[in-house]
Image 1 (cartoon, rainbow, N blue to C red):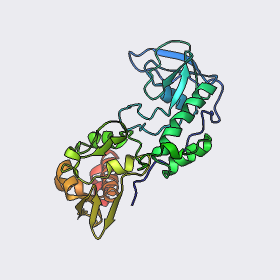
Image 2: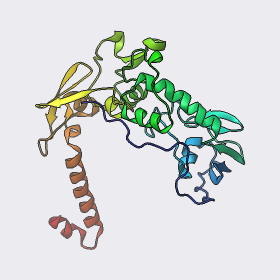
Image 3: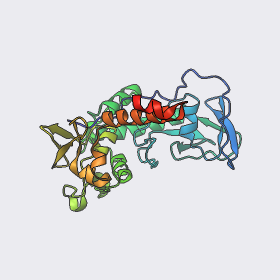
Length: 283
């Protein structure tokens, strides 16, 4: 089973339905605000907000592949370029610090840059659904002359960052140029992998494959046993995950965890209500 890549396809720098002037975001204590325009839409954001964040606040979608809101930005795919001060900038990494900034997300220079980036990426991963749709949208086709080792990986490092954020740091990018690849130490199956699927679920192309069958999960040429949820018996987490994240309490599946949390919240609400101790008996 391939990983589940992102499915949301942003348009080529075109704003969604948005007002001409947006109300300023609430200022953060001690952080000044900066104002400017993005594609003619005036916006006010805390100083240091990235251009990508500010554009999305305006309802303007900028295409991204390596970016993920839950991971540190790296700017490796270069697809999210925008124009500011007459120069191209990687919007996910570019902090807005100047007052009265002016940015364009769909200028001719920006569109040419994105087409060039996509012409490289589509040769690496011509079968990746998201890249294929973006390439079609921007009028880019694979070039057989440059389709060297089209293995479906664009070397964005998002899987590596996801693994690091989850704790194990089991995989890394190794090598240079066309030989660069995601792998475990010494280019062997990662021994520190806990089978959490963070890498596969964060991959934008679906390159990292995994499978689940008969209470086992296979990924990175390794097989993991799925432990039963102590509440319902569903097998969701590997035993390595449970051990890494804190023992038996971590084995409760998401559905049961939500149910147990809702029960605790109801108990807390009943305790705060008049006659709380008596109401607790009915919860």
